[in-house]
Amino acid sequence: MPLFARTPGPAQISVTDAHERARADEAVLLDVREADEYAAGHAPGAGWQPLIAVAAAADLPTAAQGRPVLAICRSGNRSQKAAELLAARGIEVSNVSGGMRAWAAAGLPVHDNTGHDGQVI
Image (tube, rainbow, N blue to C red; front, side):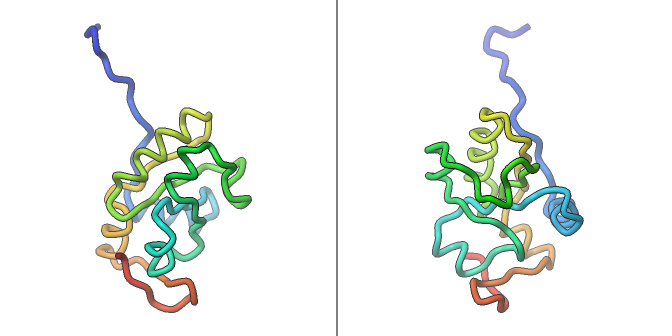
């Protein structure tokens, strides 16, 4: 065994698989971007908690408590960190690979805070 072996991080999930799991109510999408990014465009039904709140070990939004979580951000970097933090708290979590950029590129719906078509910023 290598001296500096790295433990595997949280599971990765594709945007299409994340979309299907969320639609089937098997897991909760948790957007960890900043408020303005979330307001401009997010996956329909996604909960929101910025990475800084995840890092501070704030309680998850009510809809995500006790449920599998699919962490998502713009590109997958912040959500990877959020997934690591949540996994360390014993939460079942996967990181959505490619984030909202990949989500939108796959043609999946993006809504703004009013429920209209949104954009990923």
